[in-house]
Image (cartoon, rainbow, N blue to C red; front, side, top):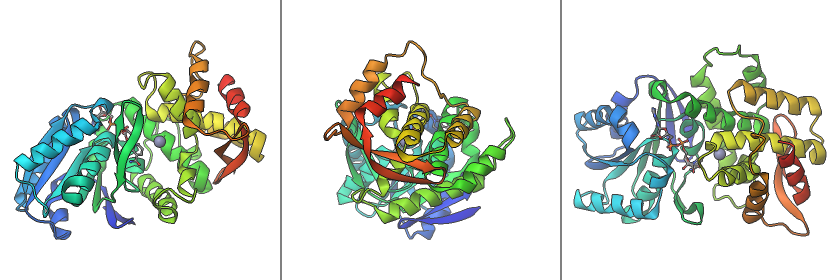
Length: 353
Ligand SMILES: NC(=O)c1ccc[n+]([C@@H]2O[C@H](COP(=O)([O-])OP(=O)(O)OC[C@H]3O[C@@H](n4cnc5c(N)ncnc54)[C@H](O)[C@@H]3O)[C@@H](O)[C@H]2O)c1
Ligand SMILES: [Zn+2]
């Protein structure tokens, strides 16, 4: 097992960690009751193991299971969870354990942030995306009818437990989408990680433990410079996300998984970076090649409604004098927020996808 410091808490990465959850919570001086929040798919697979470990260490866990899927990430659902916690007698000294992917991580973290004005949050991410991205940085929240993550709070987890064994049951598409965020991290901050990933043989199992650790370090280093997303440093993590979010929205959040849409967004951001930031064309080609090798889409289906993507970009972004703040890469391993990108550049890049 390896342990990484991130924010105020620790992240543990290794195998066979679920049965050690209770002991790890004890080490944080937590005690008494806790809410174990999970979704219907994940609870069926892992909740018993976590519950047992917590009980054996003297905790009194209440399992709260919500339906799997993004549609559960709402204010109503967060309220319903709080009501169940109150009914179970969970108090100010208690804590929340979120067991699941990014959806559970976000809503359980939000509940932990608001319950009695904030109680500790322990995250047990069960998707690759949640391990390398959503469990780091303390952003929690829910969606509303008008958009994703519009309501939320910053609340750093006290502990994150990344048990690699849980990834074995993750469907292939879900697993692959985590690589979009990993490749994004390599592009914006780590040339060496990019080269290592390029050298992996197709189909070979990657060295996940070290890879996850490296991604946690990259994201938490960037977050530490701009925890509240105010100075623009944290915005670098949005590389590929302007067009990615627009593609997700244009596909009604059904056609593409988040990581798949981000993969396409990265391809578009690279085309824009060639034009506006001097990204060498061979590096752009290497990025597209790496995304494809992890089973991620790099072209839109020919009949996909591109007009809807343009509309969604305009909905999402402020254009001043036809220009927008847009994250570009001048070369693998670096990124900055450019102010010379035009709406037309985005339209051109999407048309070419
Ligand atoms: N807070 C942040 O900084 C941040 C960053 C990125 C994404 N997010 C959020 O994360 C969410 C997406 O996360 P996600 O991709 O993990 O989605 P998810 O949590 O919806 O999980 C995807 C699917 O996989 C299932 N699943 C999870 N773990 C499994 C396992 N081990 N075995 C089998 N099935 C499993 C889930 O039940 C679900 O059906 C979005 O809500 C997004 O907004 C948050
Ligand atoms: Zn993302």
